[in-house]
Image 1 (tube, rainbow, N blue to C red):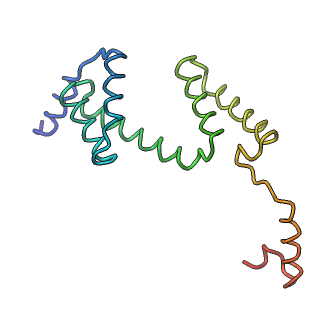
Image 2: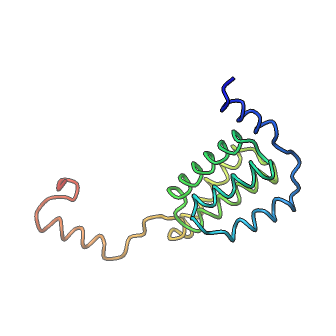
Amino acid sequence: MTDAAGAAGATGSRARRGVSFAEALRFWFKLGWISFGGPAGQIAVMHKEIVERRRWLGEGRFLHAAIVVEAVLRIGVRALKGRAHFLIAAFAFAGIYFLRVPFPVIVLLAALVGLVGERLRPEAFGAQVKADGDDEAAAKKDDEDGRTPRSRR
């Protein structure tokens, strides 16, 4: 076994189990106040505290969690465009994590809330709401050059 692989295995096997909620909450609260170095600095602090000092996680588990969090953030920024989307996502997470609602039920409920919400409050759910003059402006532009917007491309 190489030295690097042995060190990674040793770090993984030294990971401590059974972190109390209060202990984790205190750590995350403290970390939330640290902004020096931006996200890279916070990740470095998390690694030092969680993997090296407190040994809550091994190296491999920490890296896996970092990759998953990064993917979730990238997807969330692209998909969750408004407050309603964030609320649906938060309730979906709570339903899955705390209430153990099956994932297909969560997907169906989220779709239903989105459909109903779009009809009742389209501005809150990201639907494209046309202003009264939009159709007239488009028709006038078509008349000016005799082409439809699609044929101008």
